[in-house]
Length: 377
Image 1: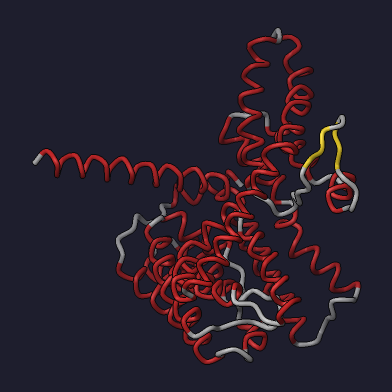
Image 2: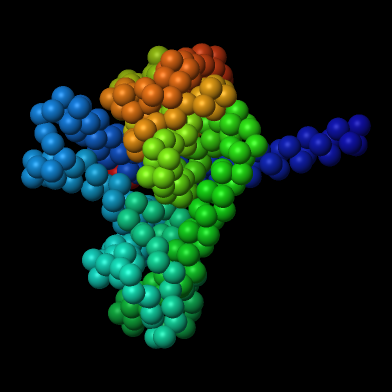
């Protein structure tokens, strides 16, 4: 009996830890979920216009529309700085300033240049901060401690004047020297791990990518796999990574659609339907952050279904001949390598996630929670 009780206690601790992590991540993204849904729809419309030949990628019209659709994702460190500051009790303007500094044109230019990046003689690793997640979240968490120290050491009369610049002076170099490179290192390990697993078993690689891809996106680590995908296409003319992403992407949509049918909240139903449809265009953030991760149980359903669907794609060697996120509009990219199994993998992911989420217990969103989320936004 004691062993059983101990096992249950360990399970409860693990479950609480997982729930705490999910709640923490949700608190970062939930306040901007309406923006994510809106820009996700804009991205989908732009893709349709591009495929239909209405706009071309070298036109100024495309540049303007792309800015409308992509600005939120490019500047997401600033938005996350805002939400993380609220979560960690940091002055929001100071937090947003740190996010802006990481994206400042001169920093972006030196990070993208050929010359070494030196800061007082210390060489910094080159990191791209646009669309990144981990560096800014760690930066704001560090800022919370620096701010607490300032409030203890600086007289109240001068706190408002001296705390923000001191936070910037401490946290920005710390981010450039430690937090940014740390995300690169983790991403590098992830990329090497993928290549090793795929070499051993494409089916196992499909299971792992399909099941855990959403969490890679949440942490911003999927960019490391994008680098490998681009290199594979340049060297061999084909890539398997994006094909394995398809199961995870479509599974998010299937789970969100099931929740749309089950929820009694009309506003949340509308949000879930929109989020589900955008996944068919390759955009998962609205479904993932606004629906599945928010309710926890549908996220598990999507991960399981995504793992099964991507396992099918991995087993049959599905691959793309150009870099593109799997979507209805990008299917031609995957036609030359086991196309029928690839379509089956997408359908299986969407359908299984829908069925799983249709029956899994979940706590529905209340009107009060929806109103609170709108106020936070």
